[in-house]
Length: 146
Image (cartoon, rainbow, N blue to C red):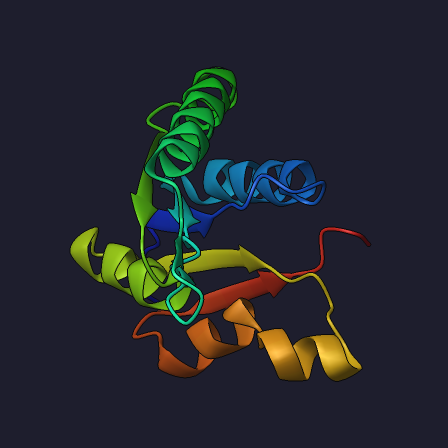
């Protein structure tokens, strides 16, 4: 059996984040692994048809807030599991999560799902589902609401 040394955990800072983070830290401690948290900012490109770009200052505010939350998360989780790291990046969430897992040579991705159904899932898709289909390493999908 392959040893799990590195775990990538995508977080979106929603109400489900605490449950996902607690579970990931628990798993990391059991496996003696290091956790790398990633938050992907998926910026709204604006509406070119109407000439309404996404304001640069709004994007910077979102990035600044996300970096502060990530910093707080790392500080809090390092007390529970040594060696936690994290980053905030921009782009397509699925592509960036997969690229991060590959770059970090991750042995496991622990990702939460919101349980979207029906029209919401059709329109928005499921980041977790697309990560599962494309990832090169094992994936553990959890429902942080249960």
